[in-house]
Length: 205
Ligand SMILES: N[C@@H](CCC(=O)N[C@@H](CS)C(=O)NCC(=O)O)C(=O)O
Image 1 (cartoon, helix red, strand yellow):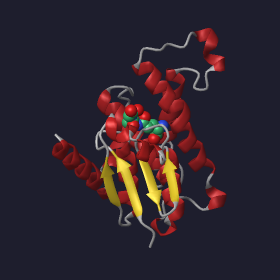
Image 2 (cartoon, helix red, strand yellow; image 1 turned 180 degrees about the vertical axis):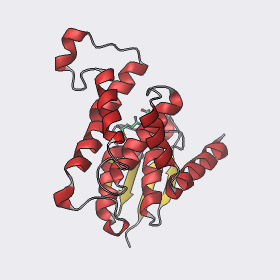
Image 3 (spheres, protein in one colour; image 1 turned 30 degrees about the vertical axis):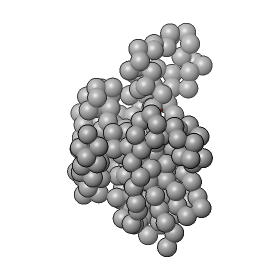
């Protein structure tokens, strides 16, 4: 079996990768990196030139970017059943990419107080934060899971973004978001991942 290593910080987006790894259920080891020196170390930047977390190293393969890590792990461990069949991936790709692009950008910009003037919305990939929220609300209201008739890696990624956004006030507290986040975070692997990261964070202090 190939070695699988997660480079992360327990108070970061690395929590998404940890959740995905717990859903996969395969053994992995964890390297905790500090903000600042650890992530900016030249040896680590060979894996992640951005000097950011998370990164996974699986044998010879290096994957950065949370959404890519979720998709990669679902494909690398098909027995976990976390990706739809290839011919049934339309919604799966759509919502993974929507969350990594428009959703993440709109939420970050709003948190930073960046307002897109109405006449510029056409050239901004997410248009407006309100538009993104309305689109996302419909996506999580239509069915129990976002991309298939079962839980997938897209639910890890979208669920983590919504959960995080609700917790920090960067995503509006709409009932559909709260219901979806509760459904996703009440899964055993999600609870396990949160407990492991909370313990790692407490340890680091
Ligand atoms: N687009 C990246 C974002 C990764 C990212 O920004 N990670 C933050 C923590 S949440 C980080 O490592 N910040 C440290 C730094 O930039 O020095 C992903 O989805 O993985």
